[in-house]
Amino acid sequence: MKHIDLIKLLQENRETIDRAYKNEELVSVDDALLDATLFLKINKRYKLNKNYLNFADSILQRVDYSIIFGDYEKEYKQLVKLKRSYIESNQEYYKINIQKLIENLYEKFFNRDREIQVLIVRLESDRSLDIDILLAEANNTLEKIYELIDGNEKVGEFFRSDLRGLHGDIDELLQSISVDILKYIENIGKYIDQINSFIVQTKKRRELNVKVMQLSHRLLDEDSSSLDEYLRLHHETCYFTQLRSQKNRVQIFADDNDISKMNRKDLQEILDLVTVKRATKDSSIKEQSCEKLDIIDVDKIIEDIVKEKSEDIYLSIKYHGELSGYVGKHLVEEAFKVYLHIGTKDEVVFSKQFNEHGVKVAKWV
Image 1: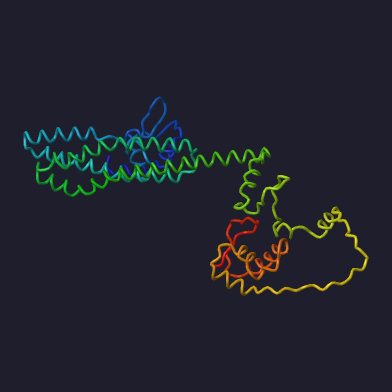
Image 2: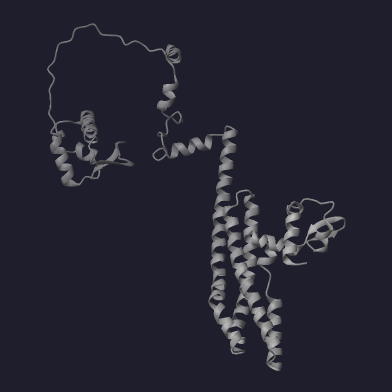
């Protein structure tokens, strides 16, 4: 059979071959496929020949571990034997076979390097497998790559030393592929680091998934005690969470979108349920008193805050001379009013911390 005839045979039986490639069971195939050894019959079952599967997987960049991680011991021993025969006989036949074997090994290095890259990409992008299965595959791949190191060094050393000087044509061939062979050998270390990094990240993802699942189960079981406790302990950093109250409640503020969804009728029904005690007015006439108005120079306070490079604006205001006329509760109230006024300035930056008076720390930048 010529090559063009093989192509024609593949074309005419492409659906049958594709079904077999997808592991579908076939009850019969064309005799021409059996004669061409594309198919084998095993116990009434028709299977694609492994040689064809290897060819198809290689072209389609589907990884076959047996191709990638096959050792080179057979080729290495054959090279040693051919070298000995060539030295003893000096015949052209052995030299040509040495060259062919070198080219075959180079092709193995080339294909293996490309296929390991494909395998790593597949591992990193696979979201269909269970994480434990993905980790098992990654560890298995890593173990097999480690096994390649000795074989690589053995073949590389044989190329660099034992075959040099045997013949000019062999030296020329080795020289032309030496840089690539060295690169493929060095890439093994990079692939090991890459897979190790993938394993570490995948383990972290598994731990995170476990925590998410635990939290989801608690929420589904309405076990929110742990979540409430976490929010109460981190009220300063968790959005819309307030300080622990005596009633052990976590409060949130209604979103504008939620408020807008409430129509007037619903709001009226809710307000009707709220009872507000009317304040009783004292009808007695009190003597009018003159209110003392004290003027605070806020600009002066700001000027001093900028000079002092204050780290807490509220404290600087409270102990400033402009408020020396106030004491006790009145001092706290007036200092806070000035603090709110200054807080509207663009130069004021608020931190996440609170001072001993329960006021958020702010400074002038």
